[in-house]
Image (tube, rainbow, N blue to C red):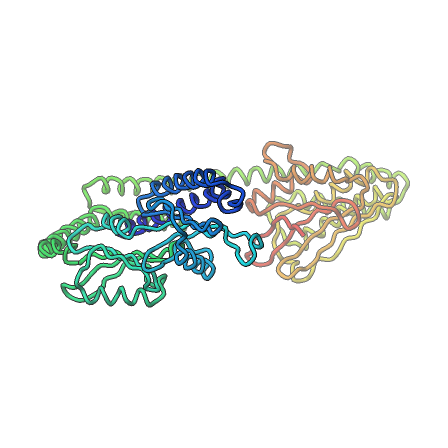
Length: 543
């Protein structure tokens, strides 16, 4: 109902717009402009020919739409009115003045109402052409109320249904069918006296058997409203006969739906819910999960399969973890053994030189340091040591190397804070970092080398930095080292920094490892962090 009313009012708007376009085309008509502008220079024959041609154009415009009853042109210059239906006669001054006045008072309107008849008015003016007069001519299209009413009758779909076409000022109204209903008449009166846009909806009007379903639309272009109404008893009367049967069917369907839902719950939902709960427990790490279900359907087979899968998974995880722990422990021992012989050759050569020059005091001290060093790295009873012992071993190693490079560099070793001295850490995590600096930096420097080992106590951890001032580290080499630490260590040789990085990864997972960056001294900086208590030990510190 709404769509039909909307389509009808839009069709009227398009038809009026088309008529207006045809009116504007007449402005360019050569014969009409000759009659309006230069009648004194035309003889009677030329005037007659021009009037006939204008009348033909008006007749064609009249026949272009069923809504048009007549088309007239008022030409003041020749004091004539040319009509498509009535021919040529004296100018109808009253209609010309009245329609021109309406166009001046309300410019831009599509339709004007004069004596309850709708007109489409086009007044063509040229100011200053005639003294005291501006209008050359006006084109008046008279619309037919009968044709408008006939077009509205297409909306009627049942007995006593009808349509009303009216403007808000009450100057024009068309009713296709007069249905005696006081509620409907009151609605139409309120519609005309109120704001038309406020009524643009579909609503029910009246009480009891006099209820009417009303749909209305207001057209801004046309300036009037279309109201269509249908008595509700003609629309819904048949539904009342089936109302009882309808509710009976609803009750039967509800009963069957409830029975079906209960059956589906017992057959499908309950087993699936039990299976879902079991999966959630496994997601939380509870591997010892079994589902008890006595169903003989496919879900019973599925739940039995889940129980078997859970049991096999526990056995498999136990086997895999046991094997992994054994492999990691063996690999850790092998990696530790790689560190021992790296610098022994040069150390023994340094000791030989001390004895050769009879530097007995330094030789004794150096031999003691070598003994402490070898005792520490060959002590395989435990994989973890207190941080204080690890730092002391790193200091001894730096002093041993410092004797060899005493003319090239000096080392600065900080003290471990008292609160972190007893924290257990993996063995031999600092020595390879110092060894890396001697091998790649101080071997290539003649003098001015500096090695710094610092322990900085942060809010929640101890940050260990091993820094040097090597001049050979450019950005490309630093980025290459960072990429190397991010690769799969199992595919490369496990020595130096990569050795430590892999040990930390094997023991502490993906969070373990070392971080590298540009040192505050200008060379390479290697970082790792230590936590107290049961917190994870190491992660790459990007600070």
